Image (cartoon, rainbow, N blue to C red; front, top):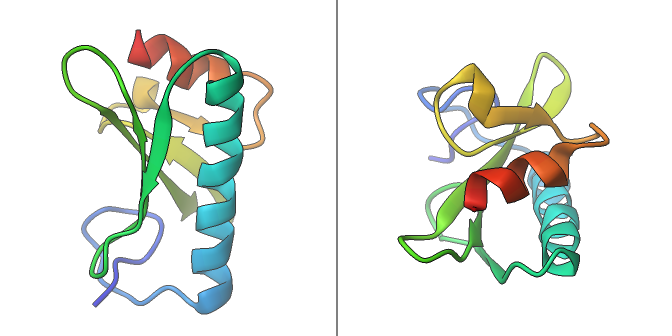
Length: 100
């Protein structure tokens, strides 16, 4: 069963439209990061959420997109400082800084 966007612990299926929107946000971020000189790829696992992998020296930074209270958010960790609203002007900058 696919996880519902919003929190990592919930287990409700995403609709096709939500999954497409989730993928769209990750692709848009991937292009923005690529223009900043970072190598990125999107992993589309069969039984879990898609993830943007940002390559770095240690291990890839894993970025996910999910919907929280009707707003889409990028997250790359569990803390409040490790998430940003997808439509924020500095979303790609925040992820870029985390990948450094």
